Image: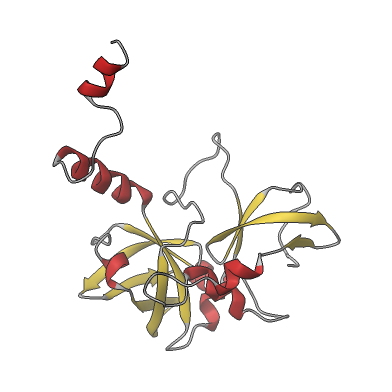
Length: 199
């Protein structure tokens, strides 16, 4: 991938987010090379649907991608935590111009992603951290400001395009903790196990 951003400081084996999917820098060239294993591009889920990584497999030479380096612990967080672990594929339902360079983007999301979406919550669309401005059934809408529209692949979205989606990781942690508390998930550490270990 060739980047117009300043990525000279990026090192071999460093992770960079491409279209919301974390990939690894393999070589230092005039551009940064990031390879994906063939099985990753062809992966299928248990439901025999294309995996999120399959979206990267649709790219061709000349395709534009959103790139972002990893956040440092000392950096100011201007959005939400985006890990680069794609949770599902969404479909562009509509992209309307609101005027003054602003846009209204509506994405159709799968059920296993929609359950984690909340009004005014965060969602990552192709690696771009956005706030959910409207949520109706499996359709979520976000407002896209002029800078975001002009500097990301969103400016080339068309109805039916597939996009990578990542939900806020905090929602997944909360779900796991609540399930554990309700006994749906057996905790790894229990009173019985501690006693067996001599505590």
